[in-house]
Image 1: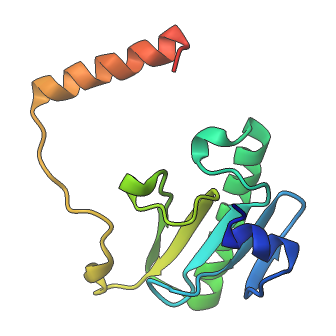
Image 2 (image 1 turned 30 degrees about the horizontal axis):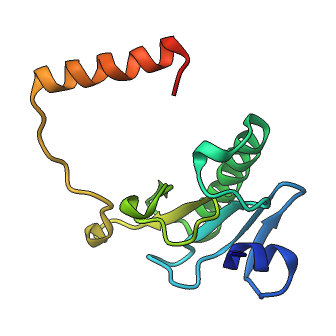
Length: 140
C-alpha cells in the first residue's frame, strides 16, 4: 500500500515543503507538536531505519541537519528534538522512514518524548554485552 508520504513525493498530495533534493524531502507536519515541526523523509518508500542504504541514511541525516539549522534561524526556538520511530510499538504511524524535527521553547515541558526511568547496573552490563556481541559478530 502506498503511504501518504509517497503520495506527497509524487505530487499527488500537497505539502508545505521546506527542502527537497534528489533523495529527500522536508515539509511541515500537518499535526505539529510545536510551531515549525518538520518531517524529513527519504523519497523511496522504505519502512524503517533498518531498510535504508548507507547513502540514503547519510542523505536523510544531512537534510535533517540542514532543516534544523534553518528552523533555528527562522523561528529562534531554545532547542529542538529529533525523533525517529521504528515500528508501531515505538509510535510509528506512517511506515515510510521519516525524522521529526520538533522546535522547543523554554517552558513547553509537556512535549517531553519520554520519562527517564531507572536501571539495574547488572542488567545494563548484561544488555551491553548482548548488543556488543551482535555488533562484533556481524549478525543481526
